[in-house]
Length: 613
Ligand SMILES: Nc1ncnc2c1ncn2[C@@H]1O[C@H](COP(=O)(O)OP(=O)(O)OP(=O)(O)O)[C@@H](O)[C@H]1O
Image 1 (cartoon, rainbow, N blue to C red):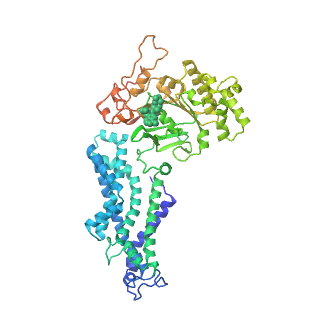
Image 2 (cartoon, rainbow, N blue to C red):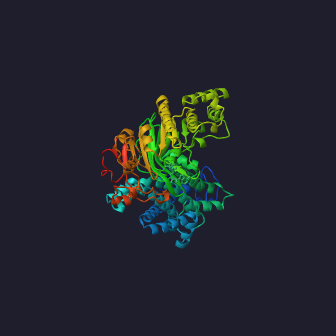
């Protein structure tokens, strides 16, 4: 769905008027354009607004009449470029892997040459003339469409709905027309308007250098050529076609920009902020989120180079809610959380359909003050979280002074209160100490106090209890529970321990190999109604109070695949007791199983629904 913007409206109106001119100009001004007035190369006057050409013909009338041929040629060349490019792009996508790789490299080589150079080569082969120049420019612009189509098709092809269509036996051409092309139509439309402006200038260029339209026919490019001969005696003669070409190009540019921004304004802005090219295509529908959702993550992808470390992750956190993220090491928990905190390392890149905290766009330009005060982060290792060279007090008050503009005394009083709130005794004395003088548990409490100092709306806690012994672990969990009850702070709590998650959180996201494989309310989890074999395996591997001494715990055989080695199908298949043939190469779609409960598993119906373990 394209949203209207002022630019889009202006562009469409301008192009519309030029199209009307193309229809009415030849019958209305056709005679004036060919009439020989006898006065050659006259300057601009009331009778001839742009003067006359070498044969005494009215330049203004000729510029208006040339609109039709110029526009028809531009539309045809753009249509050839689009059709040829989309055909090549889809053919490359449908082809086998080897042909696809060669095809993509060839397209890359073609795109790296400016379209005008390619057009000159084609025009030289076909010879000068109107038809030849249209074909030349159309062919020259087609690699741009081919590359965009192939790239977009590849990214859409990995989506769950395409996988489901293939699983249902939908033939490839229908997958292409029903599922792929409609989902890549928006960026193609944007490229179409950019290509329209490009082909217009290229066609005018060919006519200008004598390879395009030949006299007695004329387009704006040819008029520019003849006008240039009299540039010093009658500059207005060149001005008419030059203004016409520029205006049409600018209107087409407005349409392109308007379409790009209207398709997804946030994405457009990110591309600019991050200096990236066309954004990849997304799934068809954004995930539904409640109106009051605080953190919204939709279709998050975190990648390092070509490798997706996290892909297709969507979830939300509501105010006052504690959402847990659980999974083995390397499942993408931290990258997901750090993408939300905008704390990803420079070596990885995050991209999403939506990533926002209430109205704060976490992908675009954000105010550092809002980021620092609305999101609090607690890390796994309390030792590494504080600067060992500075006193605790200085580190705690810094954020208040910098982002809240508090004076030294007030910041200190607030920091003292914050330490008291996390049950640290003698807080005034602690503020004067260095981090190494505090015990591990106390340091983690101080870290939580520091994260809560600015009254954040969301607290992201990345394995905050992993480095602590069990007693201290339980105290920290109690503290987080208290903070959530007392202040209503929403939390995203990460742990590899499903037992810890089940004791603290309201809702749980289970991650495996960079994806969410199950989302489940904690009551369902506790009642043993987890449905993904991976969630059940995690539960079975967790000791419980009723585990008999000496009773062996289940283990999950094998290891998760490294991000670069993830299979085409379900990444858990090689370790799963419920594996089916399709698990090998069809990525499982996320199946809703109830309110806020769903799992991405082909065998979800086979998994017993009685208590896990
Ligand atoms: N900067 C990076 N560059 C390349 N790969 C990375 C980078 N950071 C993480 N990864 C990889 O991305 C995957 C997900 O990492 P992430 O740290 O999010 O996992 P995790 O579930 O939090 O694991 P852990 O519990 O060990 O912290 C892992 O395979 C990891 O090796």
